[in-house]
Length: 328
Ligand SMILES: [Zn+2]
Image (cartoon, rainbow, N blue to C red; front, side, top):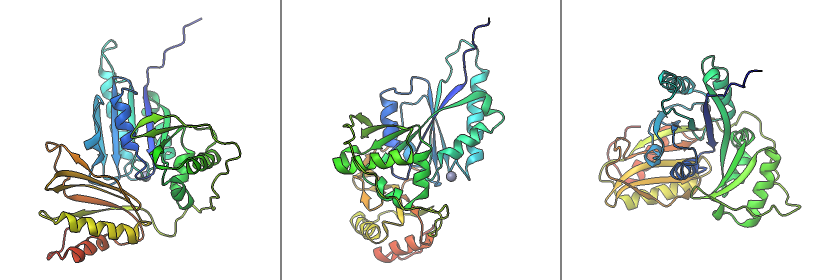
């Protein structure tokens, strides 16, 4: 009898979740505590051209940023190329050299993790070098029920998970959290569930017996409101920050259902400010280090649907009384 051959393929963890579900916060903490081991490479995919979240990630032995296309669809070829390059590097090392153990792929919030797994597994090279070990999906404890009521993509993401992390678990009341868990159980009965606050795991109480799931209406695959798309708006230098904040609040108040996510880095007198919103909620701004990559400063990405890209910059121009048309 021969000994079983150890599986030396590169392990891949897929991290998915809806726009603004807290994927990066969770991943940042997990890297910080070494949850993925010492030799981990992180791939961050941003559907928009302007990367923001990579400014937040450290603790990985390497990082690749794939921006400007979602890896489950338009950016699929770039993902396959990046993974093949990692496998290539790894196989060129001698057998006793320390080799990369794991890749964590943080998908864009628009991605269907199931399509990514299918793309990797059907690639004739990657299938021999990579094992998709687990798919983790972040679920926003505060917003997920509303999203799941209207978004087919949100339901597909839940359905693709092996493990669900309820992020921002402190933001939802116990009854809402229980109802969300019952609803997730209905959408995906096999996934394990944990909860986190700022990326750190917190205990989940036992699910009260008899908790009813939310009544989710049936959704067709095609959304009549059109696809969700990213739009970039350049912020002029010397902008009055207070007026900008008023405009953004008004915009979110009026269009918060269509604008699923807003994020960007704005230069303010207080420093480089990371601005993020999820639906109508503006997350408390975070001051970024000054020495970071400033190329994406003063560009805000609006992700949503049901409006023309130029509507956003025009609204801002009008509100702030800016003289010149802004580049979109
Ligand atoms: Zn996609």
